[in-house]
Amino acid sequence: MSGFSPEWLALREPVDHRSRDTSLARALSDQLRRPDAVTVVDLGCGSGSNIRATAPLLGPRQAWTLVDYDPRLLAAARDALGTWADSATAEGDRLILSKSGATIAVDFREADLNRDLDAALGPTPDLVTASAFFDLCSSRFIDTFAAAVARRRAIFYTVLTYDGVQSWQPAHTADAAMLDAFRAHQLTDKGFGASAGWTAPKILADAFKQHGYAVSEASSPWQLGTSDAALIADLATGFADAAAETGRIPAADLASWRGITRHGAIVGHTDTLAVPG
Image (cartoon, rainbow, N blue to C red; front, side):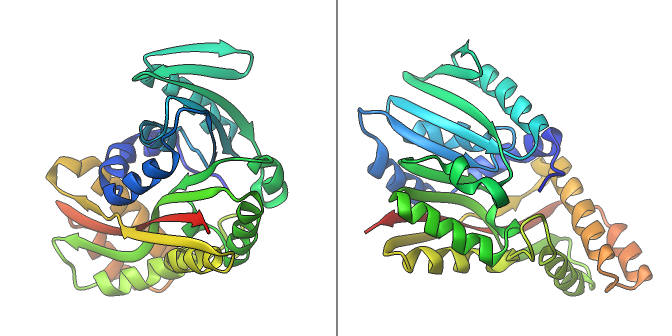
C-alpha cells in the first residue's frame, strides 16, 4: 500500500491530532505511563504523525519502531521528528530524541505487512499502534493482525479509523449518491485484499474480543470549518475522484458536485483501545 504524499499527511496532521478522543487517550496513558521503558510499534507510520501525538501520553523512556512500506515516508518521518524534538541525535539508523523531558529512541523499518507482519511487530512490544490505517485493510488481514498482537499480549491502540459518516457544507443533491459511490470505492483492494472500509472499527473490536481483550471505542470525527479550507478542498477532490472511478455517478451530477466551494465537512472516525484480559 502506498500513494500518500508527505504533503497530504502534513496537511491533515493538525486536524488528526485535535480530533483524537481524549478519554481514550487518557485510558492509554493510565496503562502505559510508567518509569521503565515502553516499547511501541507504529504500523503504517507515514511521516510520523502518530508518534508525535502518542508519545506525550507515555512515560519518560520510550523505544519506538516506525514501520512503513514507503521509504519516502520513512525519510520524511525521520526529518519531521528531528524538527519536532527538543534535540535529536543519530546513532546509526536510530534516532535518539529528547522531547519534554522524555527520551525516545526511534528505529525505522521498511516492511510489507502482508508478508512481514511478525517481523514488523517484533517479539515483545508493550503497545502496537496505528493511525488512519485499518479501513484500508481487509477483514482477513485484521483477523491475522489481531491474533499476532494477542500472541504478544500487547496493548493495541489505533485512532482515526474511517467509519463511513461523511457530510458537506453546503449540501448538494448528489451527496448521498456520492457517499454510496465513495464507500464502494473504499471496499476495493488497497494492498491488503478487499478493504474493510467503514466496517473496520467493528471488525477490529470483534477480532480483539475473540482473543479476550477488553475493547473500548470512541468517536473521533474530523469537524472541518473555514480555517480548514485547504484540507476541505483536497478532501473534496479526492472524494469526487474516488466516486468517479466507480462509474456510478452521472457525469453531469459529478461536474455539478465538483463545482461547489465547500466551507465545512464532517468525516467520521473511530478510535479503538484494546487491552489484554
